Length: 310
Image (cartoon, rainbow, N blue to C red; front, side, top):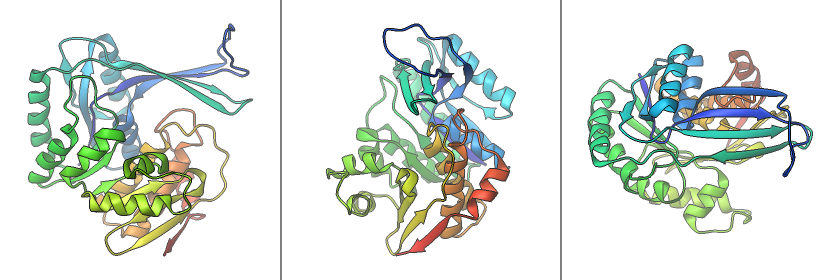
């Protein structure tokens, strides 16, 4: 079993609007309403890859009910903690295919109280017991202590699970104290963590070294269309991607995490894990919906991905 944890889950509304602009009325050409949040997107990919997965986190109000019902309709097991107050956030994305822009409007989510936090700790301890991996993804909702990911990583590892952390800012910096087995920031998030200029030619390598120093066992830094850099204590790999007709990068990083963790859970070696993770991330970018992949796309893209030992 792989468990994904999305503390600030969402219902995604994705609109396609050609010629989108401010101070104008637009007719929406296409729309999607689906369960969202980084861990939810990852769970969707893990299920498509054929591995057992469950999604957990917080759900609140009417929107939270839509989230849980939507996951059930997709065949993803949902075991969320329902909070007493507030509403699960809406995350609205406007895609303009003519300008190739992506505009996001994201609510802050419900405020989490001490009782919900206590329930979360118990939930993680229970679910980690039968999980090969627990994946912690995304922002912390209001009311959560900034070092919560470090605590949850420690709890999950104490129950025998390996853990992945996909976060940014303070949540990433403090979460590394939990010594996650895998972290996967993008290059801007990694450079911000390391306190270096992302434009530096060696920014990704310098940031990866600092991530390992801070507690990560494997740091995979996504570089957009340029691929990814993966670093462990004794090896560095560069992942190069084939050309692809990108529709939206929304959720591509989440799909990459899903591919990496699924690869690890099924016994792939590190280069094969990286190839699968990169293929999943690229396959997800072929669709407007976050976390949607087609297996035939993953297999096709894997053939064009190179993993080079540096």
